[in-house]
Image 1 (cartoon, rainbow, N blue to C red):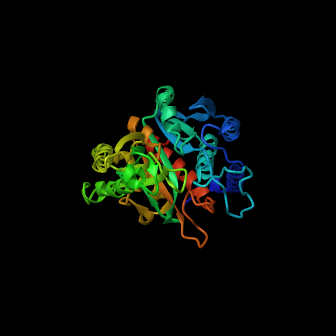
Image 2: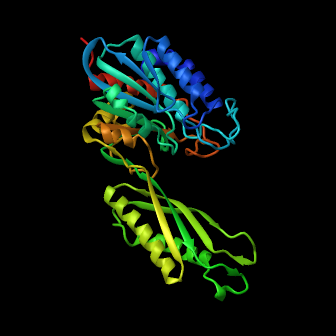
Image 3: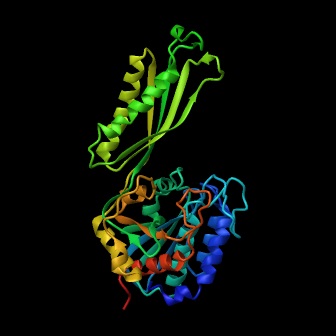
Length: 390
């Protein structure tokens, strides 16, 4: 790793900040302490600070030694509403809240880059450090965009990253095209006819109908989607009944749909409604489907993906940078920023140790070895995108 010496010099601070964020997690739109510390540190380095965009979002603005273009670099700040089970010294001190996705590390890496760039602003143009709230399902990225992020803080290009335990530490990925999937939700209400459980012929059992709907939905992926395309339909909640001896009148299915292409997303929305309604009708029941579009696909732009890969190669070595990794069917609200500005979302490998586990696992903890790597990457990318001052 060719991490910057000036960042290695304050690596102990990075580790301390990250572990402090980890011990004090805050979920979406509640990141008051986190955003306060971010704003305080940015200001202490002479960076112009703006607060309150997207409720708890923070934007730091730093001008280089010479005029030029502009770049936005985004880090997410929120934690997950789940319990931590790992036994680390910096374990969450707040029950039911846990930095189980590494946003504590993302925030810290961007702070490290801000500190280094503020101390040596030998670049042209402007860097906007975007600290975003509420990535975990609450669309904080969308909120910042809708509240004028790019109008108030012009960005010619925008970049973000995620630690990625599915890649070994020392590897990274940056490529053009879809990198994360659209993340949508659906609810299906099935209305039958209630009856005594011993007399099912007197009613229309919505639980049986629900079972057939769950099975039939999978054919939208296996038989209605091009095998070279990707889609996921997962029914994650089934709600029905209140007693052992009563066939209820209603059953409700809830779940998520993931797609990479707009056409596939449209087909899944129409298909879920069609399958639910017609399957229920075949049994004499009635079904209605509500499909809610949440996060769009995260689609990287080719020119910016190449710039990100080049910066990664400088820090990590070209042989360690993947430009053709398989996309993830996970969702990411950085997609809203990429819909408005060209940019790239990249992955930094974080796995490989005997204790590493995937994000959203109750034993997850961010790999602190990534902190100087990510901070150095952002500094390198700023120099490559904006150009170095003469």
